[in-house]
Image (cartoon, rainbow, N blue to C red):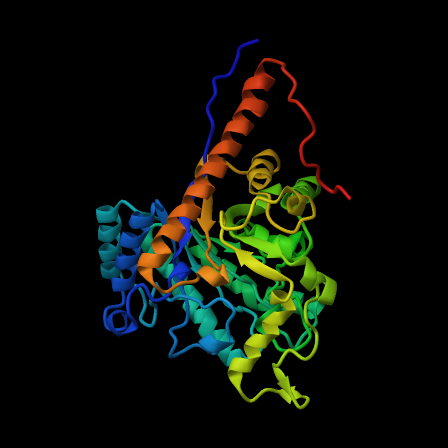
Length: 413
């Protein structure tokens, strides 16, 4: 029996540029649309990220949701008030070459099934511009949300997905792109008592949506950008999700990762449960929506009373919390991805997403060492998982040597 050599495969690191919305002051970037990208590439090199996930968003002057109503402010680092051009692409590519920092993909996180037809059309127009920018910049994927029409129930939203979202996937297919869907349930997107405001929030819906995509021959365009923080938010764990997808024949759906955690507050769970605060939040005044739009951010108490986003490496090591699915077990996350999903680790990106509220600093000098430390944590955890996988599943297996113990098990209750 020939012994295999030890050849661990690590994943590629990237960093979502929404980590620092105003790295470039607004008065400079609004008159020089691509300066923000150039300065973000330089910042990424400073903090040790080999790639960035380039964030697009509606410009603040065009956005339908004001910043004060957002839990996690978005970033239009990629400014698409005007279409992206080959000349702009050449400028960005020159900055990439100069810094040595690449692009993992582009991202635009918004509600593609918005109830208002005019708002939905503006969002779709921007998404198409993001697609065009991706082609010019030579990346093969765009990351975003499906969303939900909050005026409709979920089955009706499936029909809306077919009529409104499938054309976006057809446009992606025409450009040779993949659309990677992020699965946050977005409970605070509406002040109504709806918790799941993104149709693609879990494996069950992913499979239902992919079957619709297959009917329209765009199944290869629909993939999931998995973020374990959302699983923790809904009482799930990554290993069980990955095992479920494998059992159902859909392990191929996950095509990329956000590395962002969630820390569940047991006291908040005791008070409100996993549905979060359902009344007296402050987004309703006198039985009507508050006239102060900033009050609408209180809708996020459906989530924030029992959970807080984690920047990887900033939460205490807590094995009991891992077992209770109350924070992410990063090592097992990386192992389970290799063991259960249809991925090539060396071609898969881990995109660091920074939404830890207490560390969301808009001061470059203060934020830089925080991001550098978190990136190094992610890099080290993934290297450990790569070593364990190669040793156990390749080297030992090739010599007929058993792996010790049982490890974390899917569906354990």
